[in-house]
Image 1 (tube, rainbow, N blue to C red):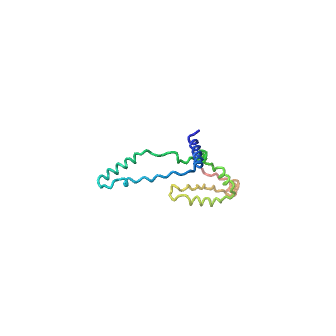
Image 2 (image 1 turned 120 degrees about the vertical axis):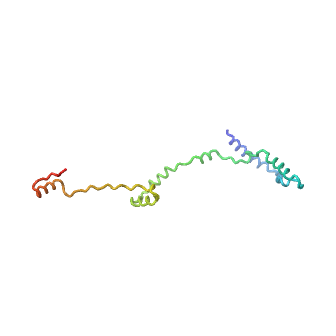
Length: 157
């Protein structure tokens, strides 16, 4: 048995005993006077008396006890420390939504949210130069050369 369980059991028993012994309540003690109230009315030696009184009060031992301490359930403490993973519920939520945005809209949002400094700017995609396609095939060029020049002209390399 742990000390906390023993304390909890004693606390429960003490509550039962308090209910059974509901007799006359003891009188409360008067609050302690402040050190200035305990000093004599003489004007000489006031500082020494104050220091002496405060020294005696300050040297009293700490009165920290477990009597009024609220005992917490260890199971509740364990459950508080164990965080529940939200991954599965988040995945279900995002996979459940069927709407999607346009590529242009998402690109605008990304551009607006990127910083103003040059180091935060995303690299623009490099456009590849398109190869020019000819309307004529190689055979058609050869036929044109035969008709125009009368023979096939070899290109100089």
